[in-house]
Image (tube, rainbow, N blue to C red):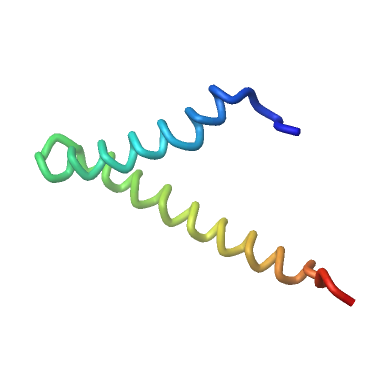
Length: 68
């Protein structure tokens, strides 16, 4: 059972992340990105990595095993 329609899943899973991963570095290399944009990108990246680590650890604490 899927929560979102297929087109929205594709946009949120592929289009937006790939767009950000290509646009921000390209702007940084060409000198178009402002320092605020770069700081924001780094800040969001750090927050997301820390959230992923916290969620992974939460999952490990709650894991009970699949076998007896």
